[in-house]
Image 1 (cartoon, one colour):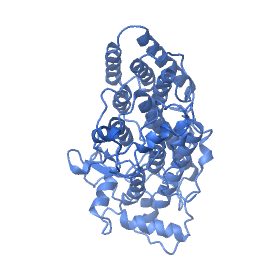
Image 2 (cartoon, helix red, strand yellow):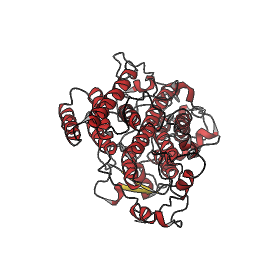
Image 3 (spheres, helix red, strand yellow):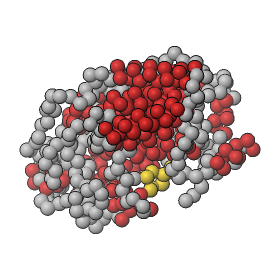
Length: 480
């Protein structure tokens, strides 16, 4: 694997740019040129950070509790669009708890009363634990018992005294604020969701071989974490069935996304399957936190920015999906004689790559919710844009490890930039045969809009320096 040497020159420049004292929670900003000359003071730092391989900063309570949260939240088997809501609650609370001690940035919900010497480790553990025991279902007894053990161990590692007590108090305050803010927010409703199943061209219906719809469609109606309302990022919608653009999308996915495609390459097939895996980006952030030596406060802000943006990406996306209620490629291709477009041709036996016959675990199928916009594109764009804004550059090399292809080289894919990963997500959903390209591109725009809103309204440095290091976000699929 190539080594990646990052210069600290831009970050050092920030410290002398007239902003005032250095922001104690601002991340090192890698130079845009890989392998750029480094000042003597940064040579050791660059060597220590040379690898782009995944790693975990064991001393960082934030990354450890992200791992704990991942295990606990995953235990109940949540959908890929409901899980981000729990991660957002956990990391929003962690951020407020740590920031109450650090006092370097605007709070997300609350700035707990704390002293600079209070234990951040106790604050992180308490905030995370209190939120997790509220969001993990009571039926998950093993997961909850593991959390209790992890929490007891985390507190036992902190010396008794006022600093420990202060950290616990900060964590309790942040968790209480989060749980209060999310009370009656639309999660887990008891009333049935008003699905509209189509029987005419263009209207969504559950696609074969699945027979039941989305188990968590209510994500569409959850109160957002950042934006005023989900509808403010309404996309332009799918192409008209009779348009040339629709025919182009149709014929592209029909060819590239077919189970027996003769135009999709082996690497494209691998990539399509690779991306159908949960929790990819928290692993990337754990790796980046370790590689860049982020402090607890920096890690808390990175995870909060990315997970809160991802949650609103999911909410906005699902709201948009059920607004447009557009059919999936498998139904469009099999029923093309009804679409009124002379440039499309039906294939009643067509199957996508995402079919149970594709050899992978768990088995693949067309998802049981509407096509437009792509959920993966929405969440990936929101999350990756938030990560880019934290680091202030697109040019961060990293690896992503999937749950697919375990124990083989195909389990890991390498990217030189955040935008490279987003571009591949957009393509991969077409290669998998489950989305029209327009759904992927508009999903990426929706996610970017969420991250830009977050940048404009949240996580601002109290001395104003950090905002100057952030850029305008990924341009994938964008024309604004």
